[in-house]
Length: 200
Ligand SMILES: [Zn+2]
Image 1 (cartoon, protein in one colour):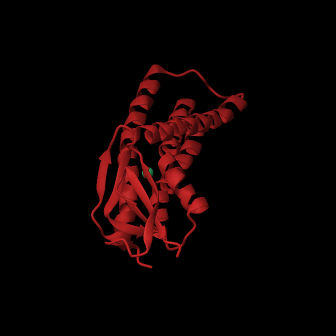
Image 2 (cartoon, rainbow, N blue to C red):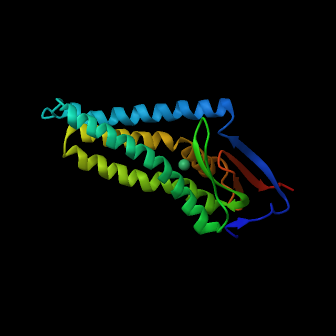
């Protein structure tokens, strides 16, 4: 099977459609995103609370510096996350990409083609895997540096995990609901369409 098709092959029908710009979908995704962030942040607090040697006093300059660096990292991360999706799509399809931001999410898509299951899964999970490794390593490293740096790294990790809610949702759909090896996906950025072979 090719990585992508310019036209939808015959005998395929749309089996699923999601639009992150749709009000209800956007709100649900963001609520789940927030839940993931809160759980992740709560887990990151556990080692601090359990360690009696944790230093909680924070120098105001360290605090301001950490806050500024973290904000810069968040903005860079949002761009890099979409670029990693784009890089995966570009390598696998060589097609024109689309990037954007809406009220509910930032997005990257490859709107002019229908991609196969492997391409969809690689592009969906590429930022999740890449940045989880980077931020988990950073969080562990910062744990041995100081409390505020650790909390900033934890916040980055949590924002990343929460921000991947749409990618996690689509990946779960492919792993548990649409297991067809010959399925196709069209990803316009905010919208994803899943196509499966007609049953006849
Ligand atoms: Zn993403």
